[in-house]
Length: 232
Image (cartoon, rainbow, N blue to C red; front, side, top):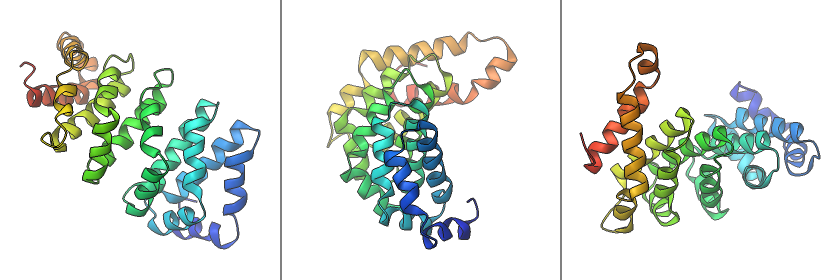
């Protein structure tokens, strides 16, 4: 399905209805996850396939999977598929908004029992933050900044790095005059303490391998601290 023409052919041969039916109703979590993975593979960087899948109702199916499925792998694949459907796609992002996608995404960002889901949610949120001012406004209203601040205490370096990336992009682009509460969120003790703890821990690393592995996290933390004026 990685070939663009093959991905589009799936719709032509009538493959979408059974695929989406599997996502919506299969009693087997593995099949639900695999079907969502096919959606993600077909739609990744493929505007034509994105539109075909959106027209067929794929976004509603994968949003429901990402939000409500009891199986964490199925939820993760649902989130992957959601991302593939709406990236660089204004129509998909509008449907995402109308389908309470931002609410689903925040819940995924707060799922500290599943670091892979958290990380993927922050990566998608970072993309959306720079896609349209309306998305950024919604994030500020729904408390994405505090959700990111909470994740700074994660044991997963991947989650911390992804949350830092989202927070940094929100700080760079949010209209603080229109959303003064965003100022309070960025000054919240939880965020200040979490950011300080990350920088202190990373500064104490002496092993070269560890320092290399955490270089991106360190850079993001330093940039965010500089923007917020929380210390050198």
